[in-house]
Image (tube, rainbow, N blue to C red; front, side, top):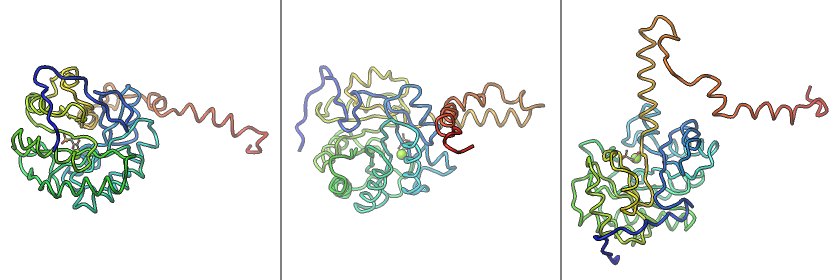
Length: 302
Ligand code: SPV
Ligand code: MG
């Protein structure tokens, strides 16, 4: 069992996630495509969260096992192609049992992810913000997934165990018990999820969690909590779990509804990226340099 530390008086600086080589308390932005990965990197994020919710939504699918692990890994690989940021993959509840979990991990690792998160719900999992389908699996079942995945992938791949105890209506004691058991089974860090409108659950967990074991958070519903507060609690990583996808859905909804009613494309479009902006984001300029370098007459191309 883990030794508990008393963090009631103050919170020491959180610990970093070694394999990601980012400072403790770093912000990871959700990405679900090459373009969203490029935008997040451009804006200075330290890493990417390959969110199952966002990738599913971008495919027009629901976040309840409708997208396969192969499809998720394919998107990770697209992002690795165009971004230098470390990627944390979302492996839902491990897609079945200890074996599917480790097979998926191998696929994510080959796609270029630095690590993955698995959550202690049944398969198929349902998005945490739905008010049904939040049953937890047993501790032994989840430990088997962690253990087999660490055995298969070794120390070069980070396995983060996410407990959905609070999401399922469980207590702080259960959350601590589960998270401790998952670290005993080999998890490199835990992810404590909450759907409260404030950070109280997460803070209560942080107060009793051993300060030398990293934990991560996704303040989707407690979004008003300053990042500095989450860092003060010791959060090792803060995931902006789905905002890129939600922002693009909103932009598309606005654009499509405006254009459908407008007299001209210009009237309906409002402010959108110019074609030149897209060329710049995707470094089309490099093509010109490439042509100069590789297609000179002396190379016999022309
Ligand atoms: C995801 O982004 O797919 C997550 C986080 O698992 S959440 O949607 O907040 O449950
Ligand atoms: Mg998810």
